[in-house]
Structures are given as C-alpha cells and as structure tokens.
Length: 449
Length: 55
Image (cartoon, rainbow over the protein chains, first blue to last red):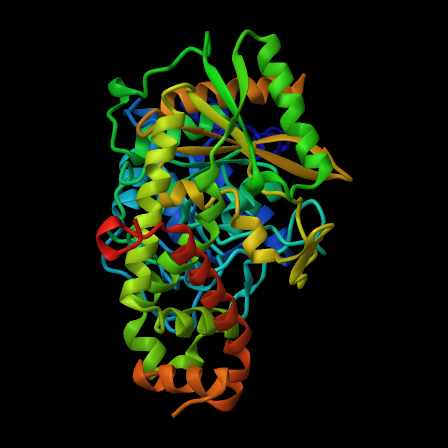
C-alpha cells in the first residue's frame, strides 16, 4: 500500500514504467487515486468521478499488461478537464446549462488517450465554459490552490492543475484560450504546455474562441508533458517527438512594457534562469517587441467576439443560466462591432509578423508565465506602483500573446516566493515543441539544483 | 436618442437582442467603458493608410 501511495505523486513516466514492470496494478493505482481524490475534496478539483467504470477499465488494463500489449499509457490514470466530451461520462463544461449532458462519443483527444491505454480517473473542475481564470465556479465549487487553500489555483484548467500537484492523477488534460493551461500550472507549480495552434485536434471539445483554443497537457515533469503531447498529437510510439539539443540555443529574455508590471520575486527568477542557462552554454540576450503592448486589447476584442458567437443563442434566451462574470463577458461580446473585430485581427497580424521577425535571431523566448504568484480567492485587482490592474487581466497578460499567435508555450515551475510557486514561460517557433521542451527540461534540472 | 453612456449601452444591448436588466446595465457599464477605451487605443495604434488621406 505504501509503495502505491508514493507512486501517486511520481512522474507519469515512472508510473507507466512501474505498471509495465508489474510493480503496481492499475486497479491498485485507480483505488489509490480515488481515495486521495475523496480526501482532497475540499480543493474542488473534480466535478465527476467515473467510479466503477474506471475500475473496469483498470481491470482490463491489468489483463492487457499481463499479455504485454502495447500502449504507452497502459493503465495510467489521467484526469480530463470537463470541457472535453467523454463517452458515457457526464460533461458539464463547468456549467449549469450542460449539467446533465452525457456525450455519446469521446472527444478526439480523449479517444487518443484511451487508445494509448489511459484510464480516465475523473473530470476536472474548470471556470464555467472555460471563460475565466479564477476557477471560482458558482455551480461546481470554488477551486483551491493546494499550496494555500485561501488562494486561487488559477484557471480555467484549475482542477487539472490541482489534480496534478496534489497527486490525484498521473497527468491531466487541459485547454488554453488565453492562458488556461499555463496560468494554473504557474500558480499551482506544475508543468503546462500549450502547443502550436492546430497541433492537437479539438473535435469534441466545447469551444470558447475558435481561433484561440488549444488543448494540452498538465504534468509533474517536462518529460511527462512530452509523452502526453505525442499521444495527443496522434504520434505512433515509433514517431516520438524528436528530442532537440539545447546546444547553442539562442534565448531571448523579453523586456518592455508588457513585462514591467511583474512582482520583483518573479523577475528575480527570470534573471536567475537566464544566468543559469547562460552558464550551461546557451546564448542569452534581451529582446524587445513593441507590438506586444497591444496584445491585451487585441485578445480582449478577439475573445469577446468569438466567445459571444459560440454562446449566441443561450446568452439571449437563458442569460441567468450563466454565472455573473461569464454572463457579463458574453453580453459584452455580443456588442463587439464587426469592424472592431477586424481591427483586432489586423493588429494580430502585425504581432505575428513582429514575433516571426524576432525568431529570426532567437530560438526561444523567456518570460514569466504570470506576473504574480497565486492571488487570494476573491481578489479583484492587483496593485502596482503605477496603478491597479484587474487580476484576471494580469494573469493572462503574459500568456495571451501566444494564443493570438499560435506559438508553442510551456510553463515550467522555477523557484517560489513565500511558499507559492513561480512559473516561467518558454515560447518557441511554430511546431518547434521539441526545442521548447528541451529548454524546459534543462530549466527543470536547473530549478532543482 | 440615447444620451448617457448607460443609455447608449442599453440601446446597443437592445439592438444586439440581449435582455439587459437595470442590474445588468450597472454590472456591464465599467467593463463596457474599459472595452471602448481599449478599442480606441487599438484604433490609434493602427496608422491610417495613404489612400484614406492619412499618408
């Protein structure tokens, strides 16, 4: 029993290995996670637990393991954000509107996880319809940060981040439209990867913003994120993401207005990471991208309009079926003029061009994931010397630019302040996840040193 | 004709087919003002083209 308990917080790769080596059985593991989930119920990480269904899948996995069948995730318990359809398991999108929806088919990403042998251990809590970063869900519970339950885990994939950090699953699936994988990863202290736009299919995922939505993994290690990326992108076992070297990699540390409002203890970790990377032979320099100043406005207009399009019917016929914050965002989105949306897309094109230009002279960009550590639940604003900023806006300010441009972006835990984790973001060129993960693995090693 | 910002918001909501209560208008107004301000910033940041007399 003790060995199983220790394994629940181990890296996914180690869990998968222990299962293949028959050191632990899938049933023991699912039972252990189910117990831990119940014990940690105050964190509000989960909405639905499949119960006996998960045990049945575990028993089937046990037989498959005894026959040495293939499957890189065979018997591995994975948590799935309740935004992805799961066949015969309720999928609510964290909403009241979909509280009774039971899909007849898996989302493509869920089907890929199952095909690789994963067991769905539960559907995780999220901000309602993924449209927010506090994960204070009025219908399914206010999610809590495992490091300090008075603080927010971030969102919208807050439940998935909690589950990974608190050892309630081996790894988790999340979605990211403005930062919803990376923000909770940063605030809770795990790894979160938003891959290149379009790299992971979204069929069967409840949409928020069609041009901004991404799916991706939340895990305890960068190596685990790489494995889940392979599975989610549909790679065969023999086609694993080519490992990249970090030798000679050019790192650009972002400077400029976008990163001026950052807590000093977060900035210190960026500098520490830059210094450590330089010592390991990477070429580190500063970069400035003036166009980044407009990302807040561009993201706001784009997301407001796209989300309002998704919810066009319900926001007009059932406005009170939404929580207050999501209702306000959707009503505002319904008022976005077409000309304003086009203006935002023109600025977006400018931002893409500027980043493409910068990536001529660097290979990865380094910046904080969030400018602050986990805020207290209920906090509405962040105070800076130069004024106040809405906390929701602050949390996505440094992540949203890479939803707008579709570049792969990884959040890696790097240091802590007053017991709260700090996340740093590594961003790469389109489809250069291998290099982003390589730098992320190095930073992980340096952070532990 | 709507005169105040609140009236303008109410008119825009009606045109968009939203059922906005008085409380909705109160809740929406600060976010609406912020949105309008950000759009103005975006417009100002995009230089006018030569063909529209801005060049």
